[in-house]
Image 1 (cartoon, rainbow, N blue to C red):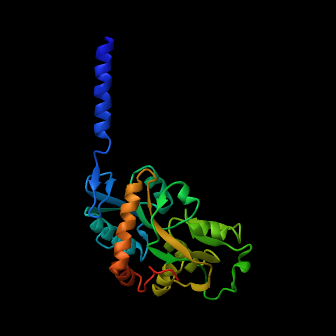
Image 2 (cartoon, one colour):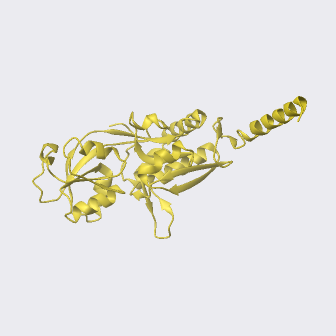
Image 3 (cartoon, rainbow, N blue to C red):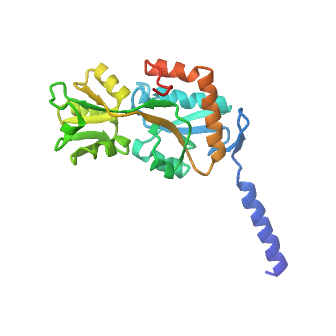
Length: 261
């Protein structure tokens, strides 16, 4: 092949690659140009094991506050929502590698997670709470030394528990950790306050011992698409101003958790 032919092929290949890039660029209703995995589709992940934020209904569909927030964001963007269930501990990695456009999965915003993904402004506020058996003599975290504490895998609660004990049991979800506590398999659980309250309502034999802090929950997006982050933040801002975010919170959680306490 001559030099001219090689040059022509090279230019053609460059144009082909360039044309492939940004093929899924979508102009959102709030004025941002974002690259989505599927044209006109906002594909987001939830755990499906964190009621009332995400759970699987009897018909197999996903529902909950996180699911509804993802749907509301898609509507604000002017695209179709697509929600998938994924194990919580793997969601951040899946967003980082562009398996999903975003995670609306109740992730606490932490410096460690921010190394892998970008986070939106907080869409709700929560915090770690210590739970124990109703007849337990555990009154504070100082009583956890040598005790067995159950947490959900990949959650910030695992790190919190490691401050007080070396005996940590890891479960796929907060609900299964609370169920194990209720069944007498452990001494305590550290999890989200709302999830704990929901478990008590369902008859789990656990009690709230102490609130350990306040955390901010954000939507995770890939670091590669800052335009999507901007679009999501615009959507959240509008959902706050119109009261829609508060409405969804009250519907699924029974209280407004969208304002910082």
